[in-house]
Length: 407
Image (cartoon, rainbow, N blue to C red; front, side, top):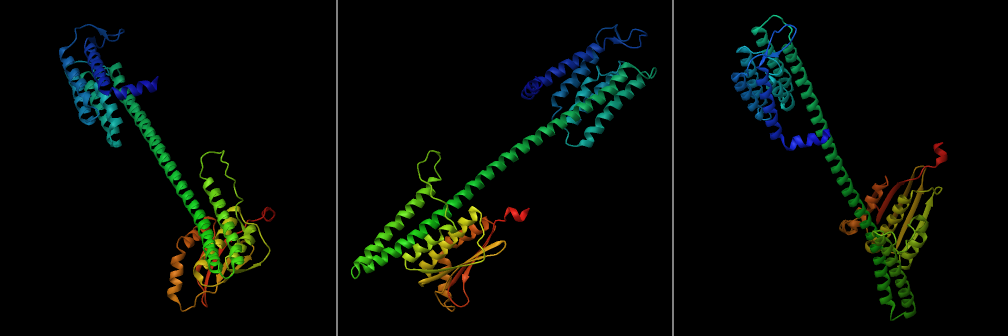
């Protein structure tokens, strides 16, 4: 009920101001009929309503219509009207000077200067109290003067409560907007990261299989006349290469489907366990790959295991495409915390700067993807020409720590 009234008053603020003005004018006019200093009886109706009080209270009430835009000026006018009512011989109380207290409440609620909002209403109340004392000092404590002090306190308390509630709601609204913006930014970031991850996967799959298919097709075309049997064998391998590429592409694209009932078979996630099969595909394309491992084999996280596999795959693909050599070496070094993988070749010469630069540029998104993969799992990748000859790709990946060592 309170919330509904608050919303209605906000939507019909001008109507509320008119109703308040009418009520305050009526109260002040009625109070002008009350006599003061009637022992044992309190204020009683003993005289007709005063036209002067009606005029002053009407002026004070009308100025309240601008209390939100000019709170200090409205408070000054309503206070002056209250002082004038006391000066013409009527009791100054919360009834005859009610407009001043409404204006004081408005100033405390809407003023941007907190010091002004606290001091000016007190000055207004003091002016009304002094007017009441000058008109009739004895007795000092009367009902009207008590209401003046109470009016100042109540107006200040209501203004402070209204200001606190408004600031609280503004803070809630600001936090809600910030949370909404944060959710949208996080959603966009997750989408961007997922797009980047899928782009890396598609690049690695397509680049690897296309290079192998190109090498196999070129070799088969070269041998088709002189050695048809060997050419046919290579063509059979080419069919297997393209079939593997299609399977991996279907599995990757299948992850993008929205429905959970997709019948696309999911291939196992590649890792170092599939490294022999990967090296065999390069052997079929004419690249001789030697592999060595130093240290006891330690487990990698699934993401780091995939990163290791894709890095070796991309590095060997680049060797096939750009190195101009038929051999490469893959070295795995296990330490206590890191797995260091190096893929090297002896293609090119140290003085062939142009060729080295072209090779780095031609790797393009491959090197970028490898660096992004390494960074995503907390690793580090370096790629560049070797001092003696060839090219080297080195990646360091964190190993999983065993639960036993943590106990």
